[in-house]
Image 1 (tube, rainbow, N blue to C red):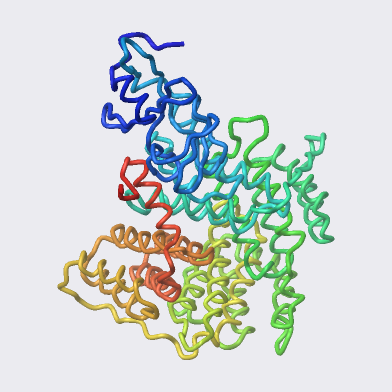
Image 2: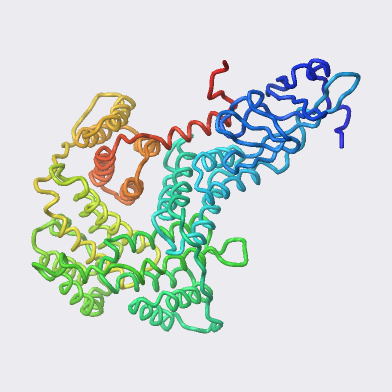
Length: 586
């Protein structure tokens, strides 16, 4: 049906179009391609929706318009693409009046922008198409949907299309969601792009996940469900554990569910090299962002937490590893504490613990029994789960900050896993006061002990002092360190100098965020930076705050620069959204 006359504008003569077969006209700043094909006139956006190549330089045959840059194909009349990686091309109503071609340069869109970009994000996730996801994130942000829609869409996808459930991708998404508010400007779009991209990559080629059902009985107590869940995890019964957990989500409040989950996660020692508790913590963090209940029939908590069960039932248990059994049986030391915990907690009941000045140093000694004695003594004196977890996380931060670069490069991951586990235990104590979280403190502290050789010798850290440099110049130096390999100690020195110069720490975080998000940062690097930002925010002491960001900068400098291929994709998506050219006309 023709558009209303007032919407139509004359743009070209019919004779000229008939002679040339195709023309480019400009209306309201947009280039529109006119085609005369099989006796009809058609108008489409001249920019290929894939990467902006002029469609008038393509091929038209049998009603199909093919772009010559990447061979994207479009059905000419309605603009639908044959190739999901390309997106549909916008078409415009046309009429012929008195040998003139008229068109409407602003027809109604098929879908509102937010709906269109949400659908395209889902397409990108399903097909693992980085450019499509980048365009969608940019488009959603421009439509005012920048944070919530990407994370909700990626959570829906990631919990359905990976049979093993919660993994690296969704954990990265949780990290980038936490970073979102701490990075600046366009880096927020980069953060969401990094998160959804990792979800798609983690699910690529995987079979879908089929969720179990909650029990019909809604009168089950927390203690009974916890007992059943722990037993199911112990015998590696993933179906039984999932049904128990789904029932707990349906019956209990979030704090009680967290108690059940983290109790089971600490029945065995340091599951999956520390990943399990960190992944569980990020699952709860993600629920903070998307909401526990959600808008659909199934709660967000059900689909998110059910997806974590395999992280418990299929986990490697560190008591099964020789490193925890020989030459010193540290596993037995920790299991002995498990048995003593009720008495230790009872002894500390009603007391207020004041952390000794050298307490963190006590956790860094070359004697696991001494470490265990320091922790048990603190519990007897009334140390809470949060207080103890915070101290252990500070000890773990030192292992990263002191990491000696004469070690194998892969050993950065070893100290990182200890840190991410310790920080996850600390954050879990904000969700539940379950006594079991004391056990996580011992796991983390023993891992800190096992990492001691990676600080031999300790890497030098700058001494706090004074600096009269402009903090902005110091931040430029921090960022420049990530352009050259091996600038580990220099990066830490510049972070410390930024504190000496009185720079705004939020500005420093934004620069570190920029350094992270412009790279092809790996999963562990994103985890590490997000975790150290959280450590900074949890610390009251200025040295601890400084140490957390120095540790992050050292880890980043060890892993950068990368090829920055994802930044190139993001830049292309941004330039296309602005209407810029990616090519030069002949």
